[in-house]
Amino acid sequence: MFKINKNYLNLRGSYLFSTIAKKVEAFTKENPDKKVIRLGIGDVTQPLTPTILKALHNAVDEMGKAETFHGYAPDLGYSFLREAISKHDFEEKGIQIAPDEIFVSDGAKSDSGNIQEIFSTDCKVAVCDPVYPVYVDTNIMSGRTGKWVGDDSTGKWSDVIYLPCTEETNFAPELPKEIPDLIYICSPNNPTGSAMTKDQLQKWVDFANENKAVIIYDAAYEAYISEDNVPHSIYECAGARSCAIELHSFSKNAGFTGVRLGFAVVPHDLKDSDGVELHSLWARRHGTKFNGAPYIQQRAGEAVYSSEGQKEVKGLVSYYMENAAMILKGLKEAGYKVSGGVNAPYVWLKTPDNMTSWDFFDHLLKHANVVGTPGSGFGPSGEGYFRLTAFGTHENTIAAMERISKM
Ligand SMILES: *Cc1c(COP(=O)(O)O)cnc(C)c1O
Image (cartoon, rainbow, N blue to C red; front, top):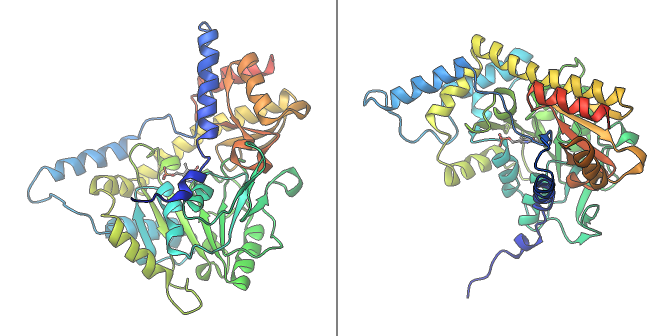
C-alpha cells in the first residue's frame, strides 16, 4: 500500500481565501441589491499593453512557419531574454549579474515554492510575519515547519522563526536571536506594502554572510518602488552575491498574471560550506523538472524591456499607484492608521477600536460592501490589521473610499 507525504495533511493554507469567498457569497445572497466592491484581490485588472501584444502576435506567427518554429526552449531561458534582463534590471543599475546567473521560469510563485528543494530538510526557516503564504506552505510540504501551536487565526508553526513586521518595527523585519538557515524576505512587501531601505537590507545581508544563511529575496513588486532609499535589488547591497537568491516576476509590473513569466537569480558566489554552488543545483533542478518557459512568453518578456514597453508598463504601475494614493488619502481622512501604498500596490491599515482582522472584515462588508483581506490570514502578527489592494479600477476604488468615508 502506498503512503502519502503526510506533511501535506498539515497544510492550512486554504483557510483565508475560502473563508472570504464563503462570507462574500453569504452576504450577496442575503443582499442581492448591494454591489460588492472587491479590494481584496492580488491580481491585476488592466489589459496587456500594445507593445507586449505585438510581441506575442509576432511570436505566434513565427511558430506557424517552419523556418521560425520553436520547439523546447532552453531550460534556463533564451539568451535574448536573459541578456535583456541582465542589462536592464542589473547592469543599468550598476549591479553585476551575468545572463548566465538568470534562470527564466513561469513565475515567482513557482520559484519561491520550489527553491527550498535544493536545501536540506533540517534547515531552519525564518519568514517575515505577516507574509506571502507560499513560503511557509512549501516548507510545510517539505516537513521543515514542526507543529501548529495555537488557534486558527493567530497560531504559529513551532519550527519556524517568525520575524514580526508591525507598527513597533516600522513594518520591517528585525534580526532574530535564533539563527536561521533560510530567510525569506519580500520587499516591497505583500501584504503590508512596506519596503526595506538599503541600510535595513544591508544589515540582513551582513547577518546572512556572518551566519552562513541564505536570503531568498522576493522582488515581485520592485517596479512599484518610488522612494530613492529603497533598493530595487538585494544585489545593491555589498556582499549579497554570496548569500542571496532573488526572485522576479512579470506579473505585477507588466500584467503577466495570466501570461506567466518570471526569473530567479542565483549568483555563482553562492556556495555551501563544501564549496558546492547553489547555481549548479538549481540548474540541475531546472533541467530535470522544467522544460523551459514558452518561446511566445519569453518574446513578450523581451518586449517589456524595449523603450516603448518600458513606457507602457510604467503607465500600468502609475495607474495602480494612483489607486494606492486614493486609498491612503481616503483612509487617512476617515481617521484610519495606514501604511504601505508608496512603494507597493498594497495599503495596510490598523483595524479601529481593537477589532480583530476578521471582525473588521465583517464590519467593512456589512457597512461599506467592500471586501478586503484580514491581516491575520498572512501570519500571527497580521492580527489587528487589514489589507486593501490598489489593483482595482479607478471607478471602484473611488466608490469604495466614498463608502468607507460614510461608514
Ligand atoms: C504575486 C506574487 C508573486 C507571484 O508571482 P507570479 O510570477 O505571478 O507567480 C510572488 N511573490 C509575491 C510576494 C507576490 O505577491
